[in-house]
Image (tube, rainbow, N blue to C red; front, side, top):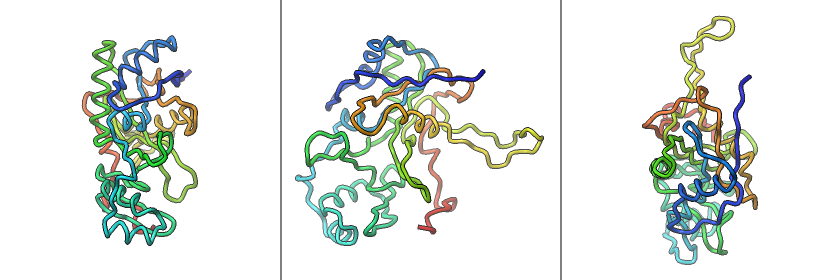
Length: 257
């Protein structure tokens, strides 16, 4: 019988700039009576990494550009907030009264460049995404290995909307130690047919499963540890969430927006 466990770490402290996230994960896991083991997959909400890395900005200190003011008129958003989004943006995909959709500097296509107010202290403070989520994941993985001697995988996750679907889902935005896909292409199905397109984004599936325990409100459980997925996913030394990104020539949705 196939099974896995997903355990949300309880009693996780509020994070401040400069905190060692890996050390806090290890210490919190032990307080929960949980030992980190080889092959564990640790899913971390990006918000705590943003806080630890000092990626919190006070909107009052932002001076909007003329471009920000123009987009603010279209979208009905604050010019200061739009300026903050533009600083994190490579390309504006759509700006309207309903949405400000951009491709951010990390290559993620998302609303408001992933800038978020939820679970951030201070009325005018907003959290930016980590500058390099893959690097943040790798740093966390190496530090956990140093502290425990165990080889784990790290997935950094954030919540995004999806084309043509209501609601939001957690996606992987940074990786370390795990291959992002489980590739079935070239393999046979139950009836012997060769699979041609099945290339499952397992890291997104794990991130989505983690959100069931993380929540989005006052739960204060920003880290979930998965056990029992060795053999289901493939671990590796080099990986990147950038592999999940498709080019414009592959994008089925951009022209439909």
